[in-house]
Length: 337
Image (cartoon, rainbow, N blue to C red; front, side):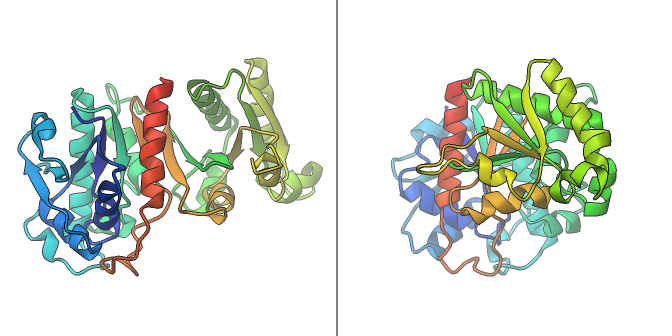
């Protein structure tokens, strides 16, 4: 049985290419790719690799795939001719295929046919063009893991060797994200982050909470969300035994939390209120090492922290480093369970 499932992502982005590169480098020996075999073959060709790919009729055939051959399971619902679509262009057929691969992979995981999920990048505009009613992986996975119509509370974490950041809000307009902030949601984020830290082997995870406003509101001079919403959530979390601190000025807290040579970080996680507040510092440290982890799901899911890179898709220049880091992170999380 494969340990990891790797979805191909958008077929006209860099996903197929970096999957082929990671497999050829020996980093996906325990993985089964969920995607279109023609797309994966084209990705290998774009990467300059002489890499055979085999379409498996069933997951059970995985361990019979010849050594050095990329194993691919093709889910139902993929359009024909995906490997003929132009590289790097938004296409509804590509968006529908990316979604079908996620749906198929989650079905396999829920059936106990693999242990963890690694997702190559998809394109949100292509998803929308296909009529997929979710803005990204996180929301689609949350829906697929619902129980009796109840969505599991999930949060997005972006991590590398130096910094781990968990977001309270993710893919929504900034104005709407600010309006969506409330004390229960922030408290829930702190609980999810604390639980994740415990699963990672930390006995008492140290969580810094970044403010929303400049200087964390400066006592209400620059906004009162810190006073009204964030501080009460921190106080409630601490009453539950969670080591949450702040709110801290968002322009300095990431430097304090960063683990670097000669500079041990003060915190294990930073909780940020909005998408770009939290992700810019991690991505600035290098997208090659960054990993997106969905916290709160009943399954392990990781992903590279970059997008489909339509501007370079098909040229063979994309780096597989973040995908490799995502696969390694998935194995680490499985080992910590």
